[in-house]
Image (cartoon, rainbow, N blue to C red; front, top):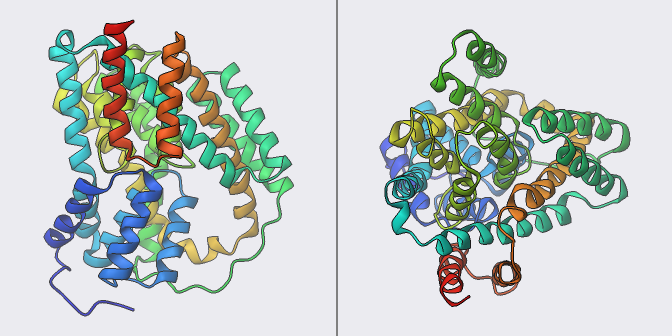
Length: 401
């Protein structure tokens, strides 16, 4: 099932198609995957329904933002490596530019912005993360062993609040998954319409592991703020399993204790990230632009943006040649089941610290968070509208109370 048209095979055409999606795709990763399906399976017929489902499965198996990785793979299938870059740029740049501008606005005109409105953005982050925890727990923690792994992961991460504590918990959960779970074999599928040689796949994956191991060493040998930022954001992009919201605890552990970004700015930016379309990983551009050290501003935002997305490109292109073998591996699926349960625990820990402890101080804060959660989960209001409403409500509460 392929489209016979050739007018959308150039990298520029791919960029424009994804730019429109980047400007209009609100609602988070699951919504993004729905937009992609409508655009590329139903409307443009770039690939079949089964191929698309298989591509989504691959990107959910890999660490990183699944919707962005699906977009990269779709661009690769249409226009090669240039198409992959064009698809990523079109889908990512609108939200990244908006968040960098927001960071510059806070830095330069912070005194003109109502503290109540900024606090409202921190409060809405409680509702957003709570919704993510609930949805992920329903899908990924479906039995007693998975719930147990989730609870243990939450406790460990709260007791060992560091990036390496989180990585160690993910690794331990993968081992537990191997021992506890016995997945069933998948049914029939269509092969992915993407051709990457095994040799190219090995090169891309080797580059990924070389950077993952080499950047921390380079940061020690060459003390530099730029190298330290690239190392931190590349490592976060390499280790985030389970969706965009799980990036929150890993990024918080990297940028807040080090003093690069204040906790108040971190949570305000995370709240603002819910109001823009596109991938949540563009929150990295806000953090880079908000750095208390140089580089910051536009340069810092772009450095952190490229660093956090680089693993996604290397992993999805490198893993494609080997996916047929991986998708049939029961051991791989078992380990992934344990990892997925653990990342729910990581996100639950983040809901408490820093999200809850930095935003909920008074009864009205709890009430505003509850209204925002109901608006998201039951009234089904658009996330951007809930964020704007929470900022306005925070401003009004600061005047009235």
